[in-house]
Image (cartoon, rainbow, N blue to C red; front, top):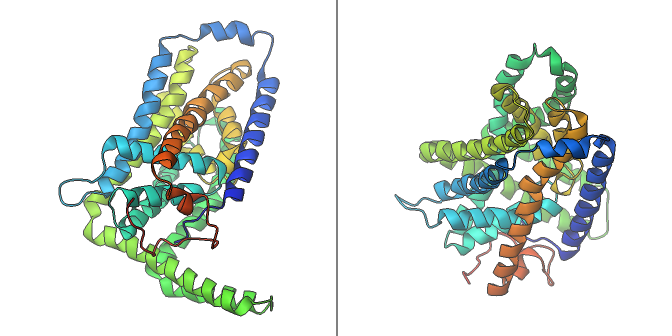
Length: 366
């Protein structure tokens, strides 16, 4: 499994994330801010500030608990809750600037291996952290049935369903085929790889063979990891999935607490259900850190329950709590990690001799 993240990719992703996120946020604030916005800001009850901060901390501990649960060896885990939460925060820094979980995977796999977990174990935990939420999105089916008569937000839901249905369906079909029919995936992969070989690029034969070998390796790894947990560690997998569900739920309560702080009281079930529908959109966002997509998705959410003049401010608070502050905290721990472990640069940022370092190579604990 590829572990390297080039420094140039990191820098470009960081620039794109900052510029896109800031520009979208400024645009939303200009569009939503009205004459009475600043006056309405006085309605926010300061008692909700500590609640929001506490929820933000709890959210990362639940996410870290996923790692702790899957890392159990016998009755104990080599990971502490605190360390697992820090690992999640450090991975989030790279996830914010590299799209589709690439950065998160690299950082998590290496940091978990540092905690005296085998490479195969750290990779398995990281892979499961990426794909378990996809299966949680199956809950969207009963939610859509439950909310189909919600006329108040029917237009919002129509657009939402269009946005989430295709990627979720494609990903779930891919996972099912990979689990139950890995040979079919290999045949398709082989056809695709050989088609690339037919393009007759310079020095392409060796690269094509290496690519085919790697694709087969990834398919076998994914299938083996998932079946191992399904057959031998069902209870552990269920407990870990529940941890992710709780982390998501805390996220949703953060948005609710923002609404409560401004004096709005939406229906609890409806507000949480809508956010569960939104989650796939931001989870599969192609932009670094979901910049632009996260803001627009939650702008639509907040405008269902509060006036437009306050919705932009609500999105800004929400984004700060769920993204900006965790990135700052994660960067602090990441800098400290780099200071203690210079070898991390070889795996995460700098690969001077080759494009990638592979997880199936042994890595000595620093």
